[in-house]
Length: 135
Ligand code: HEM
Ligand code: HEM
Image 1 (cartoon, rainbow, N blue to C red):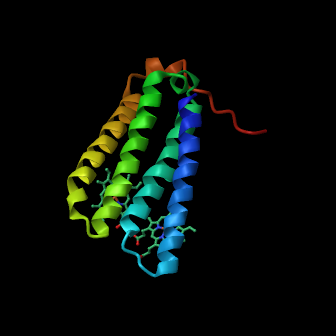
Image 2 (image 1 turned 135 degrees about the vertical axis):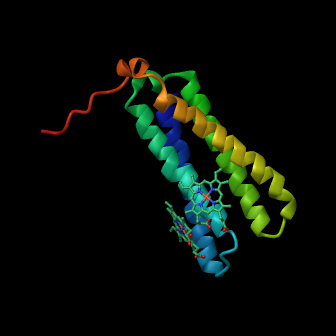
């Protein structure tokens, strides 16, 4: 599977869960898990979908194992961060170290993405899809 397809599929799963959390909060009038909902949607839906668009426009990067590693790390970090932050806000303070570890996994995945973006232009030149505006 390409990195972009994995990103898009996981992003849609995350936003469905995020929307369910939002509706759950609204219905119960208990917004305790708001930070978990916000980060699931922003890391899991918005950021992951943006990664997918970036990869889709770079076909060679899109089929690479390292891009799949980036998407997997980011997604795993997002799941653990969401569960841990929700647990903390529901009173299970013991989940704090787990949230800390998950945030470092998310940071590592973003550093790997930063490497893709900042590495020398020569290695990107032959894998970027030229932007061709619609007629
Ligand atoms: C039907 C879908 C959704 C429902 C019912 C919903 C519901 C909620 C609720 C009840 C809150 C808590 C508000 C508060 O306590 O101040 C909230 C916060 C938030 N939601 Fe959603 N949400 C939905 C979808 C989304 C999506 C798709 C995103 C992102 C793309 C999103 C991003 C956020 C953010 C960032 C916050 C925190 C806002 C703040 O800092 O006050 N939500 N949402
Ligand atoms: C590992 C990465 C991240 C960590 C550890 C983190 C941590 C935090 C913390 C501690 C808060 C304050 C929560 C509160 O006062 O209850 C917060 C709020 C917020 N963060 Fe993040 N954040 C991360 C990444 C991001 C990213 C990538 C985005 C956007 C794409 C984002 C968007 C927000 C927003 C909109 C809020 C205000 C809503 C809320 O209180 O939950 N965060 N974040």
